Image (cartoon, helix red, strand yellow):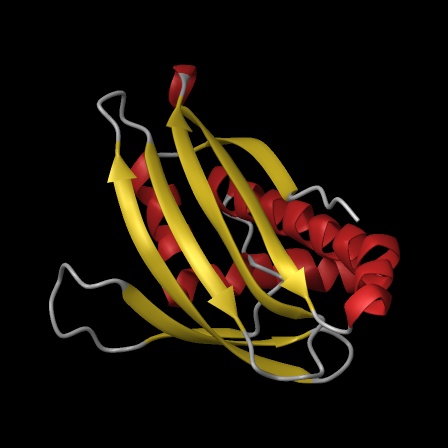
Length: 171
């Protein structure tokens, strides 16, 4: 079964460094990204080493703990930036076993930055896992990614805290 990767793109009126920090610093990232309960960077021996981290997420089946590695960042001559990621979990309650993706930041006109992500993952549970992913999980995680990007946008553009946005949404 051919899978389509998750792809979300949004223009955000913000300084590149502010958007970068909000998405790359764990204490900021976990505030707006619905997909994560916590993100913790692990110590690095050298500045040039990949950034390893652990994460927790509560996806309805319980608390899932996983690992990740930021495997690189690229700053383009045009001011764009890319951050790539490898992630996964050994917990059998998670439909996701392992995945890879990237975030891209493209400067535009009038102080807008196009912020986008594309990622894909391998599933557990064989054909049944593929069917559950296609019918339920992949649409849900795509929606969660898009909602999270909207929350980030309102936080950076209008100063509305992510917590207050989610509180109003569940209201």
